[in-house]
Amino acid sequence: MSIPERFLALGDSFTIGTGTTPERSFPAVLADIWRERGRVIALTNPAVNGYATDDLIQEELPLLAAIRPTLVTLLIGANDLVRGSTEDRYRSQLVRIHERIRADAPDARVIALPQPDWSLAPAGAAFGDLDTTAGRIERFNAIAREEANRAGADWVDLFPLSRGGWDRSRQMACIPRRRPTPRGRGASRRSLRSGEGAIRASASSP
Image (cartoon, rainbow, N blue to C red; front, side, top):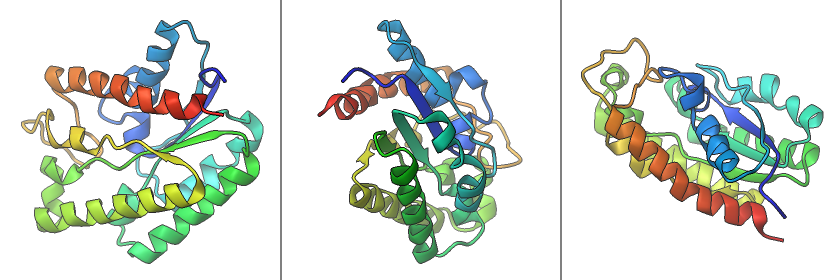
């Protein structure tokens, strides 16, 4: 099986690339890496800044039946955390999302990703003690990983990248508006090239 041609990227600001340009969003960078290798990729990225799991279920999941993706990436949870979602509710929402993906795109390879450690951003202080926030992010990511594994999706852990390379001098009105430094952008692309190996392996397996 070759690299998937129909790529649906589900998520929030971290998927749409808030704070940078659309071509620097991670789905666009990943699609470009594949195109450089001669693949034809049709990318659909319906992610919206501020979306939580409720929004993704209502606004993004209906695209599954229309697009019939062969690859789905899922990165969601930061806004659930910010809005005070409990861990149990977040887990139940992920169960609903994975079940819908499997029902409407049963042949798609599904890659789940962690939310970055946005507690490191200047705006992170607005949400309380930084260590507490970072701990909640890690617990939400653990739930996302567990539910991905339970649903038969793959988990690609790019979380360590989020703990370095961000420009902290730029004050932001909201957490998703982070702009990587040139060093961070280079690290992001190198990390995506490494992560692409795991994604490609999972997409190419029988």
